[in-house]
Image (cartoon, rainbow, N blue to C red; front, top):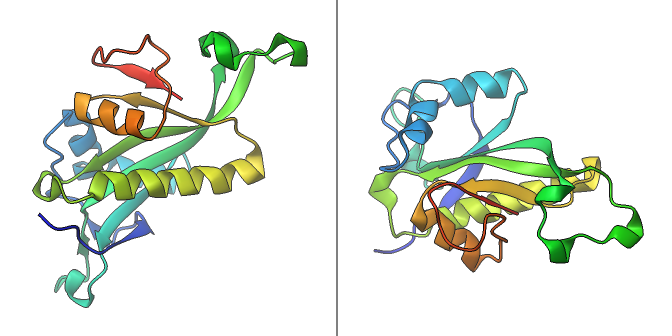
Length: 174
């Protein structure tokens, strides 16, 4: 299948999330369909960006656009004890925790599997995290790989597995 032309937009009421199905962890699809992502966006709990088709005909008759995929980011901290040994440097007096940008969720609609949407979303999340870290200071992107496929994608992009190097079903990565 060929890749599709996409753009990222902040999640609003103009994005139709009712039929979102990532085909994977239920919590990802339900968070989008049930409106939890939009609610949390409005309450400034996180930022959710959606991938939508970049074509002129992307907007439906009711003015909304179908969501092809999405990711959510939030600022947070992680204990330095969770870092791999090679990442710790006691000579600098490392604090007890480090600021991170938490990639809370990332999912693409099942209908777009194999079309580069996951990579597009991850690149968008990295770009947003880099921009945010220049303002608030963050040592990296922290995430949890919730599927083997996601784990492999994150490993391809040089994320470090904090839980030992083999996918266990819920791996923390930086």
